[in-house]
Length: 212
Image (cartoon, rainbow, N blue to C red; front, side, top):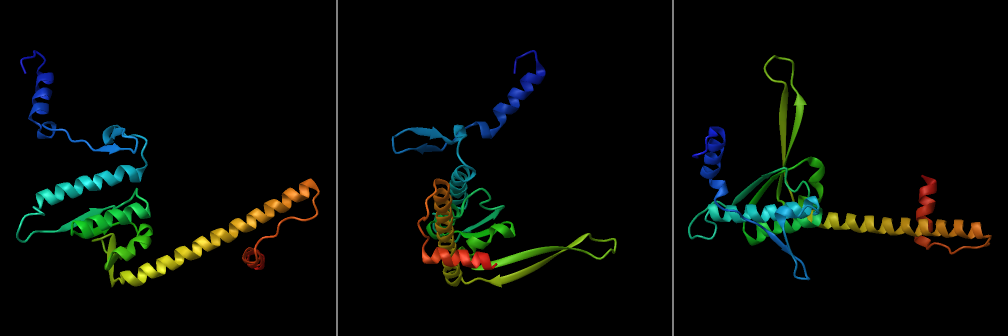
């Protein structure tokens, strides 16, 4: 502040007066080998790996500011926009369960429709907003139309688990078909008359694909 450069002195004064510079917080990731990596220098993590610690920080801040563990009535609500945009389904479910079941928060999430499906079993109500063009009346350009519905988490979980099983089965059948075709091409290239046959389920899948 005694510097003859007044611009530099003012910048230093603002830096010193900024309460955000009073303390520095860090999150450390510890591996099984005992090594530690600071989150601020962890540049190789995926989006989900970097986003998960941010929810831990938010949860810590909220529980402190809302006096979550004090006696008496208190607000227990977390509103999150563009929720879990970088996280996979498994990691997202774990974070939701931590916030809802362990900390007791009521969670309100806003996210694109394409990301909602797998997470519906974790919620009890859904509001969808559709944006449509308004009549050319010179007042508004578009209209938002809400549509609310009650969700049944148990039934949704059952349907999603059934769908996952179907996808796994289809993937297994496709793998068997591709393996059999590869074996046939290899055998033909070597002049072998026969090749291993795929399972009956894989043959059925191939027949269905040919029919389509």
